[in-house]
Each structure stands twice: as structure tokens, then as C-alpha cells.
Length: 319
Image (cartoon, rainbow, N blue to C red; front, top):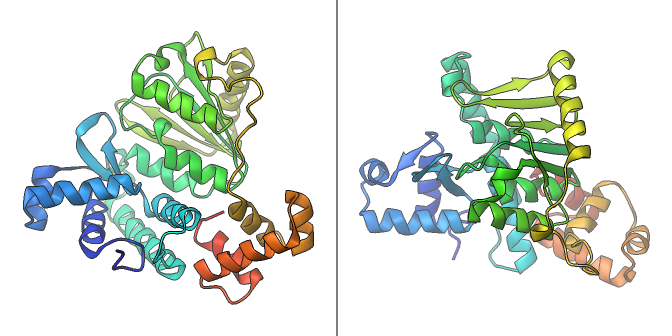
């Protein structure tokens, strides 16, 4: 049972807060830092990984990192709402937790200066994806265990926000079983990656105007100028046109593209200002069904009105 406002038991939340203080932890370091028995650390870590709040560190399966709150906590709330689990995380507490972490991260960044060695690739990517509005494009030259390119929470966040997702993979990426499993999951979401014979640069493009280029030695570099982003975007479009889906991850004929949970769509349309009647027509369901969804969402989001439910869903990153 949840003991904290963000949907975690107290010890799990304590471990999560501890993970957020560094970019990578090993189990023995956590045992020492928390003064917990190793079995307890392992058990709490498994809980965090199951709930999507922790992951193995990029390229090091023996170390762990926290998934950024702006990605992990809204995803946790969305999943609990879909599953009807209770008691659910409190949106106000989630918003407060994210805001406090963002301020703390900014202070650390200011004190560290602009040195690249302080930047963790997954952290940079996650914080950017949480603000995406239109489209995400992933260029993937190879499989990296724990890499952001293979993160389901990132894709789920984008889809909740109505963001288009495209992925372009080098043909060799599909070889590891873990990568193929992710490709199949993407296909199930209606997002099969396209494969190309060449090796693209490792990068992510956000909304066609910002990009992150990742160098093995120097780490991530955020590109914001048109002189840097536009050539990369042009290359990406050429690769996308040349790329092809592979049969092993394509959807079966006659199987429709999966639809996002109805409550999630209702919240997004509420935030856009649509009436219950308009939402019902858009979704092809009854007004009563929409009103039931709105009532459930208002209760889960501690909202006093339908407008507040839509606004709060957007505020905490649900949509």
C-alpha cells in the first residue's frame, strides 16, 4: 500500500530520492549510503524498476539510475488510473516533487558550470521529452543496454502528449534480443522502427527545432541553432524515406493501430476546451460514457471541475 503522496512506500520513496542525487549507483554503494541490508536494497530497487522509476545505467547492467521525475511520476499516475489501483498518487504531490527536483537540478547545474562531464545522456533526453509538443525522432546506430532509445516510458510519455514518434535504426541494431523485443513493442504501438543499411549518428530531434547529438567520449550536446539542427533534420528525412520496416516487427494484416486509453484522450480533449457532447462525437461513444470518464478523472486528479481536471492533467504531465 502506498504511504506517500507520490504513490510509493516510504522506503521506496527514500531510495528513489537517493538515486536522484547521482547519475549512477551500484548496489553496494546504496547499501552503504542507506545503511540498509543488501536484500532490502535489492527488493526496493526491484519495486522501483517495476514501477518505471529506476533503470539500469546506460551501458552498465551492474549499476542503476533514477528515471527523471518528469517522466516517471506522470507515467506512474497514468498507469494507476488505467488500472484503477488505490490509493492513487496525488497530482499535487507529484507536481510539487517534480518542481522541487527541477529547482535542485538547476542549482547543481549552476554550481557545476557548463562542463559536459556532469551531463548524463538519459537525464538530458528525459527532461527534454517531457516538454515535447509535436514530434520525436530517434536516430539509433547501435543497441546500448539501458540507452534512452530503448526506453518505454519515454515513448509512452510522448504518446500521452499526442506527440508523433519515429525511429530510424541501423540494421545491426535488431540483432540483440532486447532490441528486437523493443522493436516489437514499438510496432504494437503503431510505431515500427525503420531500418537502414548505413549507420546514422546517435541523436534525437525534438519538434524539428532542437536536437541532442550524443558522442561516445564527450556525451550529449544540445543543438539549438538552425545551422546545426536543419542539416541533421534533412539527413533524418532522407534516411526515413530510404528506410524500410522489417517483417519481424510489423503489425499483422487486419490488426488496427492500438488506441490510447479513452480516459487519456478525454483529458486531452478537455484541456482543449471541448464539451462532453463534442468529445463523445469525436470518440464515437455515448455522452454518459464521457461523463463517467470525466467524473473518474476529476476524482483521481483531485479536481473540482472538468476544466480543472484537464488543466491539472496537463500540469502534472499526464497529457
